[in-house]
Image (cartoon, rainbow, N blue to C red):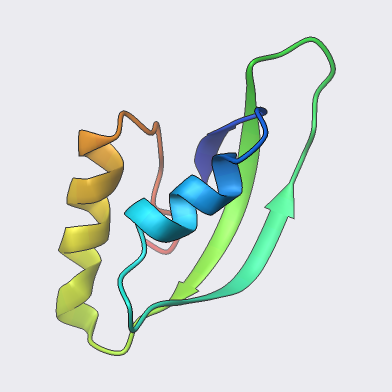
Length: 72
């Protein structure tokens, strides 16, 4: 789950700056809240290599996304 900005272009930035070339979004559920700057998004990402997971976490952290891994 990722706290996602409710600004235009936020999804495009996520795809371009967080996901790798081999990654694919398999599930995306955004819960828009009125009068909030961000909202929770459940994102399913398919990786070609499981070793790429840490890179996604690193990029999310470097871009100041708040996130929680739900598959533990």
